[in-house]
Image 1 (cartoon, rainbow, N blue to C red):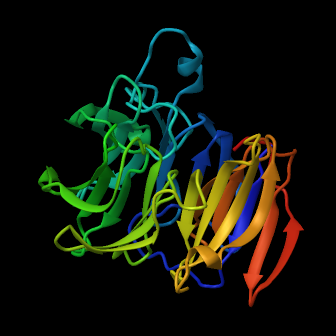
Image 2 (tube, one colour):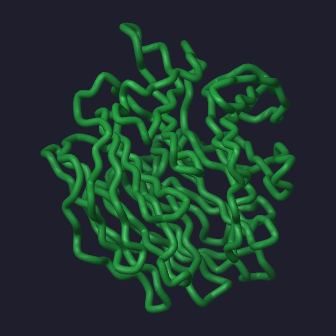
Length: 369
């Protein structure tokens, strides 16, 4: 029972990288296969997670591996396990040494990054947001081990031991070879630190922490995403912050903070967000609204409007157990939204063109998001 909301953006996204995101594995045994971009198909996974998930494919769109947290069966066992993430190979089997990665219960605490100049090895970066294993970690995956069955050859290498926001993100370096991984901490007192890690053939290198953006405390739901060009980092938090930072993909330096909405705005409890491919709109999900905290919304904001908050357009209203969750830009240029606990075998398609909206139903299978 998977329900996905499609927000169709009439701009084609170009994918020319060596690796792609053509197979999404998530939720309770759910997946979407984007190998045919004009006709994505429901697929399967062996994940049973309520939190983070990540996957990666080769240039042809064939699945290499995926990961998620928490492992639901481990998490339900009263044994104090705090490293609940796991890695699944292309045959939907847990990799050798692929259990017990750091990560539990949160939603953007994992990201996969290729190791430059090596087509066999990949990093999984993961965060301990609120469990006893705080900090930022990485594990190294060899996808070619044992005829493609895969193996975790390094596990839970710790880079830092403080509390990390639920918003790890990554972007390709300006040289086209290396990568940047970006994290932010959360504290009981106001902070605005951002740290970038360079992923190069030499390994993982931490750059000096930068201090930019709105100061905020107890803001663990602080999500970060780059635009398609990789030169803007958008930050959206449950406390009402919506802001943008310029990013130099060659130096790793942030600059030029632009605040669309500050602390204590009229909109609180942002959950997921995404940027349209042409960077003209920002979409968010808003949950725990009304006095009973049983209502949620999908909102659209105009990033070019002189008054960002006034530009809001409500695209959908949801209630009870039917609340909107994560938003994600697909390889087909569409923005997908998971809807919690929706009815069986349904989804809704929304097309936005010149201010008009149409919708239709389609079947995405019998899994849970």
